[in-house]
Amino acid sequence: MEIFHIGAECYPVAKVGGLADVVGALPKYQNNSEHIVRVVIPHYDTAFIKENKFDCVHSGFVKLGNFNFPFTVQKEKKDNLGFELYLVEIPDLFDRKDIYGYEDDIERFLSFQIATLDWISTRNEVPDIINCHDHHTGLIPFMMLYANKYEKLRKTPTVITIHNSIYQGQFGFNKLYYLPDFDLSKVNFLEWNDKINSLASAIKCASAVTTVSPNYLNEINNSAYGLESLFNLARHKSKGILNGIDLEVWNPKTDKMLSTNYSTRNFEKGKQVNKEKLCYQFDLDPTKPLFSFIGRLLEEKGADLLPHIAALALSENFKQINFLFLGSGNTEIENQLSHLLASFKGNYNFFIGYNEELAHQIYAASDFLLMPSRIEPCGLNQMYAMHYGTIPIVRRTGGLKDTVIDIGDNGNGICHDQASIVDVCFSIQRAVNLYKDKKSLNKIRRKGMNTDHSWESVSLEYIEIYNLTIIKNEI
Ligand code: GLC
Image (tube, helix red, strand yellow):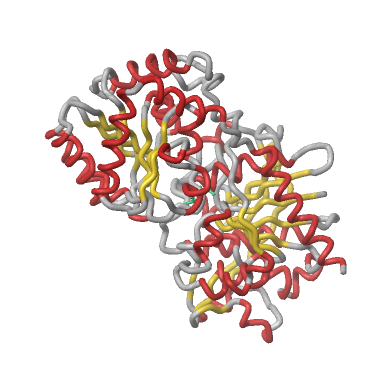
């Protein structure tokens, strides 16, 4: 079958968070002799674009209300990523350094969706399935069903994969005229709480809804930033599918970003070599347990707790443990984390920013990874950590609950229920005790490394959903 994945990010082309990792990996594992998989994202001003060659396969004008933006569709020449990659270039709107965070994000992503459908609907072939990711592509199912100019795509089933329901792509009805002409009697398929809501529209219109873990699907039936009742209504066409991790990118045996590669057979030594190098670089003590955090510094990730956790744990356990944090986001959290540097020199360090290579090195070098998330639809970091022999310390929520079981229940990590300083510090104390018992520590590390989180079987679950929606559409 011919499958399109449409999203805002795709690793290694453009990445802010886990969405990119999924859109860069799932298609690779679906692309085989039976399926041809094409990924479409906007053309941003990123390094990948300068380092690879592209062919222009389509050009046109995207109409957004009274505006007309010229656009082209560029195909990456060699399918270097293991699937066909298409970038929609709308110079006025997307040739910028950042992916999100502009005042005209609504206009940008709406234009991207319209340009993408303009192109797909002018091709000779009609795709078998369109898999949209998150709200940036949430109006595609509606437009395919009801916009006059996309009549050709009306029978193609759509899937919306929800990576995070906090972000919904809402805007006022004053911008309704941006949309291409559509059957006005269907306007209610755009609306939620008196606004146009891209994610809500996708849930209403898509043939199927997937969330990135089974537990997250259960949670959003009770708590989903105003969309709970809609998720309940869509339950019959919804499925939670746990993300995988891309073992071509995340594998301590082959990872070129590490100082030393290692496997389950020599991980103790391998991790220690990586730890010594990183501790030297960040002025930390490699004989002490290393606790790390990697990710966006947002409240949803519990990152606001980190400065307090580090300060408390270091004053109580002073000189017993090390912390190393990597991330950027909320400036207040960044400032608080920077302030700690002076007080806990030698036991604490912080790198502000996004740094893929350093992230790999931290997974390899750390003993424990903190994930005190308030919301975590799936979470990939705990899986990367386990695969690199690092024990996750997580709050039981979303996909973290599906993947991490407490060591007290013969599991693979340390769990707590509240996103609170006390709960996390108590977990750190348990980790320090575990660290002293090398035999148990290594048993749990080995267990994590042996857990199968590969995409192979997961990608088949998606294919199964596609097949079901195709059959349903044919009836
Ligand atoms: C979002 C979610 C995260 C998930 C990722 C990939 O970033 O917050 O939990 O792992 O998408 O699906």
